[in-house]
Length: 445
Image 1 (cartoon, rainbow, N blue to C red):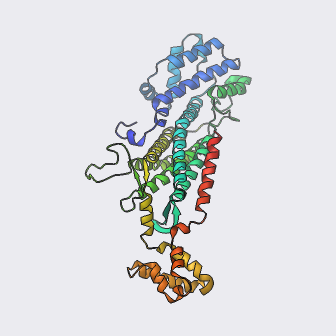
Image 2 (cartoon, helix red, strand yellow; image 1 turned 30 degrees about the horizontal axis):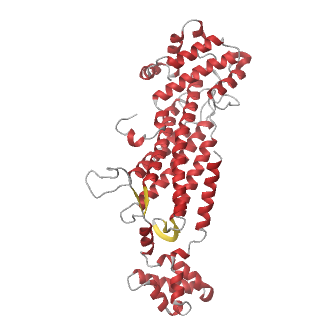
């Protein structure tokens, strides 16, 4: 955690769900659930399980101290168990951590942490998606220059631009909701031998008490679950990063089709009074850009040997936590950016008209090709377009004056063909389809 950088790079409610305090709470909740599950299965006296749960709930444990003590054994669960055992005392102390190993506690706590972080993450993503849907509806007919390789291409609508963002966010949300966070309980080598025949019953009760999925078998070295979570969080950050990047590009001074209107002081510069930076979108990009490396680290740690790994499992803890944190921050900042977003329809049209209709030259070529052949049509329109871009006249006038083009198309027909609002293909239908899919997803909640 950093007091200097976290306000930007660890913003939003997810941060608190993956803090050291949250980790400690999850570890204690796992120990309490383990004791209660043992009682459910008849291998731990109920009064002892209740005593363990009471200390887990009300006892004080110092995260910094636990962290220091973890150096000797390689993980924070072991010193926590030792301290918890001392605080519980009496006969009940014999049943602290009964049947489990440190990795069971750490893995189950990680899943509990992810499950708890998912709720505020979904809240920000759903709010962002709803705002995008509103923009798509409002601007379903707002003509905008489509851009490929950063250059103007054929016209689109800003509604379609927003619908593309919406489809990405909705898909990522669906993937996040489908994640099943599973408990981990296998004992020393994944056999639960110390629980005897009660092992499966304890696993079932343990999973149920934590509200986590019951795994078919312990997954100490089969890390597909971690990889799946990493992939979904990486997908979320990728979608957010792409959306935020487009916002920042459309907010450039030379483009100025979008802007963020934040509170006083937002978007300012330390040296240039005129600046209005889209700082929320910038922060969203900054948070999202951290995800690929974290995902890669988790995937690199996936190959794990035998029944318990030496080092690879330990390597997951920090990137797993950081990935949740940066995804939460990215979602928070995207939501903020969208809530501040202002759309300049007039500037969108002016930018599209800046080429004098050149972006519609393909349409003129297509119209002529059936009569003149595609090559002849292409050469004639290309020549006129080059002259227009060189400042020799308006494109419509030059086309009308060309022997090939003007001999087959009237000036009125040429101007109609150069009207971007009349060459949007299925843009409206695609926006409507994206909105319908969004509405259906939200109705299913």
